[in-house]
Length: 276
Image (cartoon, rainbow, N blue to C red; front, side, top):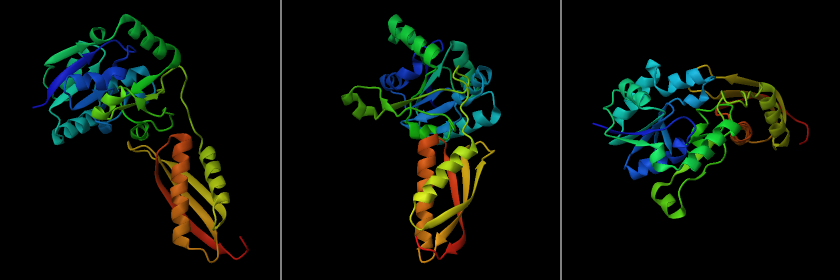
């Protein structure tokens, strides 16, 4: 049976900032924070509450009120080799709700934020939350893309000193959720199309891009699917050119928008005989 350690403190007091440190000190194999199950630097299951449109929905997501959400995390826990789990929450009551929804035992230990952080550190964390809208997730940015489609995440940086970094290989990323006062960031399909058009103009072997379609997935996997129609120059290696185009579009769109590209489908409309 999995043993639970609780980490409790009011919202915005720096719990996620210290999550990996608390997990390390208490020999926890994994963390549950804001609706997601994290092991090492990987998200095993769940959907982040920070991706919800408002605070009410975020709280519901964090305590696993959605049956499918709770079931997916329960199954991931059952399949894993996790022996001790750190659950982060804003109150003891929230911990009670989470362990109930995930069918876990009551915590064997509870760590409170004021036991490990000074008043000044908590005050600084609150200021950052209130004025900058910053939320920390203890995983690298690359892990966040499926969970934060359309949002920008800072590059990860180390929590621990250099010698401890080797022990835990720990990263954290900062995101601004949809319900922060910065508002919601939306990236229009036209912006993505412009990126692809520029890529097409610069690539050898492509005469022109004749059509682009961007489809946003309606399922819970998030991400986008891109379909591109092109005219290639006669004589080029079709497979190599289209493969390069797929890779370049995925790379540049994900880098510039922080949106996950699920598929890039390329169709050849015709071949051009004019000189490159």
